[in-house]
Length: 406
Image 1 (spheres, rainbow, N blue to C red):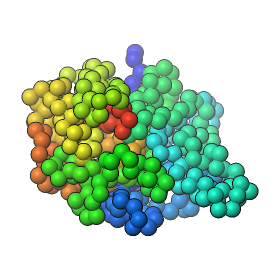
Image 2: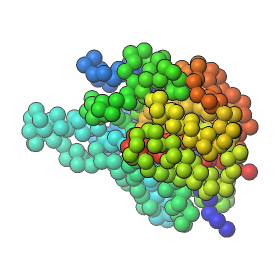
Image 3: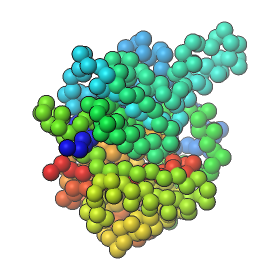
């Protein structure tokens, strides 16, 4: 019998809420929480608007010994892991710690921690740089700290594929489960809203320069002017299906298929072919025909060339149904949290399948492409199969298929 990976726990730390229930309520209601940056004085910088996690106090959730040696992106991950494990009601096996692993993705790493220590080095010298600088900024910090804190000694890994990483990590964990691992804590969180991290990206020219949060991130519209960055993300408990059922776990979604491609040359126009190939590969692995796709959670970069390429990729694979299948981009209300954005879309997609409700795309009222973009309010849909898409800025394309368990 083939081993399938299923989601049994969802843990969310997002700009629109902490915990899956709070996140889903805000997401299904289409609430936008984009606002002017409060992390630092954004006056001298071109980027004014972001999605920040403001209702989060790590000191109330995480032991001080972990807080002092980690960055905010790991604080988010530790909290989300706790939430996911509690949601799954998974008792970690003290007698078999090698049966459970951790896999996370990150694009930005621990920028806030790193910037602070570099400032200390520049202003006061090397004696003032803390010893945890060597690990706190590192992309693998969240995987390592979750593993240490929870005593998880199974397969552990980190993926760095920009926004595609949130989907790629889940697929990677699914493959580990098919090879024999019992369960993994998997997902992605980010905390990139810092002067250093944002300045490193101004050169790509893809940030929205809007001052008005309501007009800053408008994917699939004529008014699209770039994306709004965000922090936060989601972690999940993935388990082998039969094991999960034996212990009476609630199966929230089946991880049915995934594929990834890389189209670094040719700009976003090239992502049409690459994204279409990823979608076909994910559907093939899921044993899912294009006509079975009930809802699409779009990458939604809000850059005209990129949006056009994504729409054309959907038409390439879904044919005439591409104009009929509900498409949504909840991230328009919270921002793109890089690898964490893909993970948040997976959380929203799993909850969409569970509640038969497609959340709307916040702030968008007049979509301008040949797709059925859900706007205004949530739409009741008897959805059994969700397609989640993500693209990294360097040319990564990823597609993940979730299915409701029969």
